[in-house]
Amino acid sequence: MESLYIISAILFGLIIYLLVTVLRTRKAVTALNQEEFIAGFRKAQLIDVREQKDFDAGHILGARNIPFTQFSQRYKEIRPDKPVYLYDQNGSRSGRAALYLKKRGYGQLYMLTGGFRQWTGKVKTKK
Image (cartoon, rainbow, N blue to C red):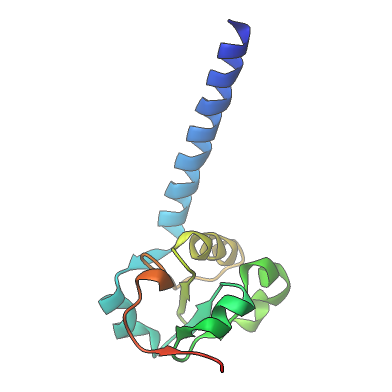
């Protein structure tokens, strides 16, 4: 019986953590569908936060690769005075990257809903 309480408390804590994370992400970044993303990313910094091998396999034309695993070392390559358009494979890491940037004073943060997986626009691959 005691272990049931412990498991329940852990699950409750996990649910609260996930809800807080979702709410913080929504506050930090504006999620855009593909059409909205296309309309604005040419006037912004387009950042792919996937790993290098995924980027090389195919990325949105004009994107720069700053993998999320290297974000704390490389985020200063992103200018804080210009809009930042982020994307990853499915939309989870770009939200975390936006939270990271928001904490460091970046303001205009946008992410692609559904990530690269749902992208149907122009793609560039490395041979």
